[in-house]
Image 1 (cartoon, rainbow, N blue to C red):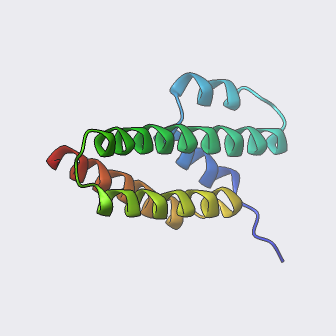
Image 2 (cartoon, helix red, strand yellow; image 1 turned 90 degrees about the horizontal axis):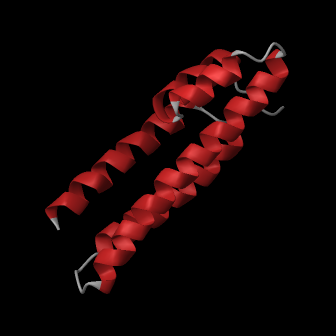
Length: 111
């Protein structure tokens, strides 16, 4: 049996990474199943944008001759975790992803 994410969990996740105007518009939708779909989509898009930005910054550092092997590896792992999360929407996986984003950001600042 497949896991269905709960609306409250999706709201909580979206509140952390989706723009507030988007969340506000989603909340105004009356149909709860439609709200779920909109939350899932907006969370996916927000994570993909965050991931693409991070990947671009690491790629830019590589092009500038910096040793970013460890960062590239972590970014690839992060991409896999994001894809897995987009299929399940487990909150514990989301929290791991956010920690990974923060960890990679710290390492980027060190380079």
